[in-house]
Length: 438
Image 1 (spheres, one colour):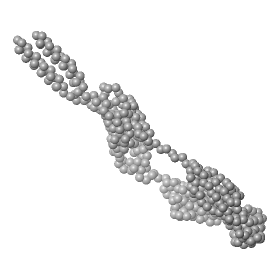
Image 2 (cartoon, one colour; image 1 turned 30 degrees about the horizontal axis):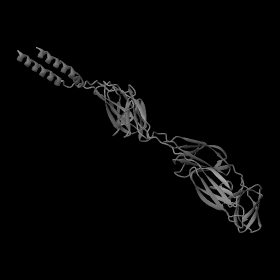
Image 3 (cartoon, helix red, strand yellow; image 1 turned 135 degrees about the horizontal axis):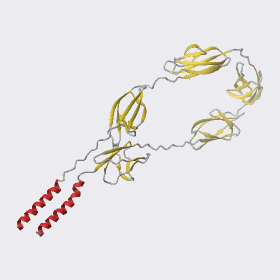
Image 4 (cartoon, helix red, strand yellow; image 1 turned 180 degrees about the vertical axis):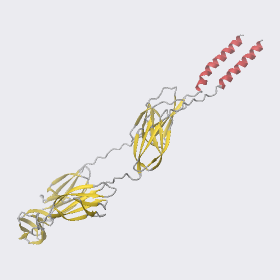
């Protein structure tokens, strides 16, 4: 009898020990899938390292009976981090979350440079890319990195021209050795009417009457210009050691009440309407010339099928060309693309277009190529929604998804035959011993 009680105690102990095993075999595991656009990014759940993205995703097993995770983050050096909230899956379920990492771009600062110019002798007029800057020695500040032309001029000396390069944040030094002219002379310039602008060899020198000293002997070109008069131009010889007098009489322009208007457009072929009168069409290149247009304010209108009407005001002056250049704007939709509007109930679902993640509902996508596209909408706890829609040029296609709750999946319990077989075997042994004792 004592042996029987001993065996019953053993059977009960084994039953208690094997009960947790049987319940564990029932299964309470789920999975969290992280999809990311950057391979090699590391994934953390509540700060705990869970692995690295490979092939665009990482699947992490979790247990619904364990302590739940609340947040996830995806990180990689050289990219912005991505953080989000987690929803724990139920037994046998998979929750998918998305992370988009953007590269960190560090702008490269570009500093201005400077140019220090000196000459021998000093006091030369310094020109920077043809623009006067002052007398040497001089420092030219705020110069953008690049290559530039420096010219030094001084009466009684030959001009000196050179090029120099400027680097970011540095100063370039330019030395201009000037050679004295072998012989010099002077020009004395008079004009009728007086106070007329004078240019010598293409450089502005002042107004008449004007004396120019220390000029290189030889041939020079003198030009005089005054509003309302025809330009005067002549070649003169400057004598060595002497002075040449130049007396210029400018002829007045005839009084006029008209001018010209040159009209161009991009693209060409636009109708040109001036104050309601059609003057023809703009050429493919160049301008349409409108002659004998009265001085004063006018309205120019350009029209072309498929483009918005272009209107501009232009002022015409006597014997002067005024220009109008119109950039025409298309009125039709952008060729080959349309728009796509996607919404869902409930909102906040992930949207894929042709298996590419594009955002979260509700959203409106522009510049979608014309044609058929597969739209997939996913939200944790709801069945996936998938539809094929057509996008037309210049139109908006609409997808509205009413999401259905996901059907709970009851995990199939694994057979607990192992502990039952063990208990049955122990019962047989106990019966055998009892009968033997009898």
